[in-house]
Length: 342
Image (tube, rainbow, N blue to C red; front, top):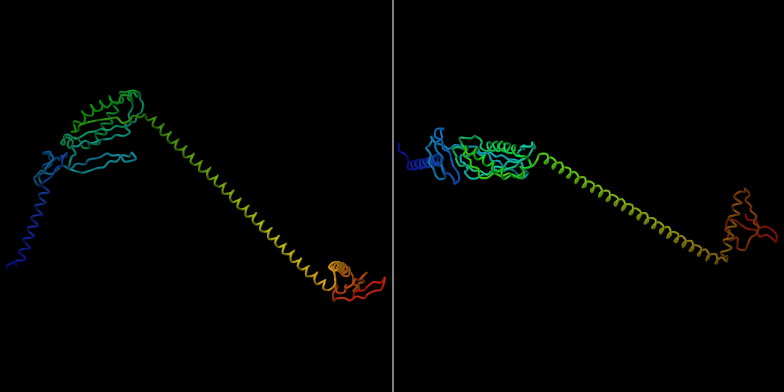
């Protein structure tokens, strides 16, 4: 059974793609590119074979492979905390690196506790020794530097350690160079950053805490004083507004009462004026009206206290009948007689 031309073409294309894929895979396994200032240790069947310098290199498939290492990088964040990052890579960095040691506790010759900070500038010269002679390079550097610092400061009094940093740096560089050379590491520079007595640090910390506490107390006192002042001013304003309101109420009440009294007086004056006009029409004077009204009230008061319905008036004036109204009648009396009001 013959294959169709299309099927043959498909098989050829698939075969070509598979060949290209396998070629790329083999090249990626066999070829390795080493960047500048890097190095790679190659092992053959688990045994060290050679160190690859920068450039393109070919490896024997399955037999040769690069040695993968775990590098620890010690850094410090903005708050001064130590951060250790682990990186797994076959590439060994041959460039200079800075190793910082903060607050290492040491003792001087006169038994004074000190805290020393320093930094070390180094680079890897021998990749083989760095990989196969030491397991944890950064940990070894830290522990060795700490022990060497303790040994150096134990031979120097505290007073001399403050003024002999150059001599300390030279002694540390000499001792470190001899030790680190066995690990393929070269020391370029070693400097002491600061030397502080531990007691002084505690004193400074206490002073800092006291100063911050004092400032916080001052801020709180100022805030409380300002709050009391604002509260007093608010109370004063409230009382002033209340007093102004009460004064305004009293003023408005007084004005209303005065205006009411004026209106009442005007109404009474108008009523009296109209009454006087009516009395003048009836031929009676206002004086006679007032006299008769008071006299009549007095008489009615006397009559109200007596059961006798007949009241005798001592006199009667002209037109008094009209003033007394229609409720009663008068009988004029002669000279020396009394008038009766029924």
